[in-house]
Length: 329
Image (cartoon, rainbow, N blue to C red):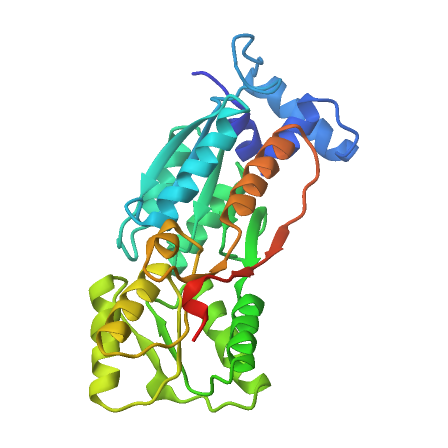
């Protein structure tokens, strides 16, 4: 049986980063822990693999990347950015796409761990059940787990997030400055990101003394057709609105298309600053959630951890409103 640092970490009940520090002679390990790890290596007959390609340790040079829908433009872009960043450090990517497999998502992270990936990057919020969270916690005990735009608040996990709540609050302020008083909000799901965006929208309304009307907050399918149908229904019910904010660019595109079809020329703002917003006619203003910065930071955390360095548990970036044609009345 080939003993690896993953086995050593599990046997000692420490993280892979701790084993890495011991191997690299780092001073940031207590003598008690160092002695325990070294003794375990001796007892288990561990010998560093001279042919390993890792950073001075037995590394597969493979990072597991897990998301819910790689066909989605946001996730596809994130995977591409992560793969490009990892390639500069000579790492490969093992991608796992969970889909809407609610309650069984933990099997995907179990499979990635069994393949001895060096770390796992989770994009978005694919885990929701207690069983999933327990598996995440167990996995993080042996290898680094980095989450992008979610925060599970689990030991030994590292989160990289964008403050979309504050960004969305500022979007409401910007629309209020244009005298918009009845803002329609479309969203698809209350994930970590979705909840924060909706909270920011509501906070912005409170800041501006605007009414938080339930009829103007609509959950819709994440599609052009879903957004269009929502606008058609709002107009049919004679619900007034003088601006539209959508939690995703695809919803903003569909909403704008439907609004224009009804002769409604109102400001429209999406979120993610994707290519969809740039290709729409008129082009759509969008809240940039700094995806490139998030992905780069996640990769940097992995590289620093594998080098035995300390990294922050949470890294946060600020969102930015990108103003385009749709913002002007």
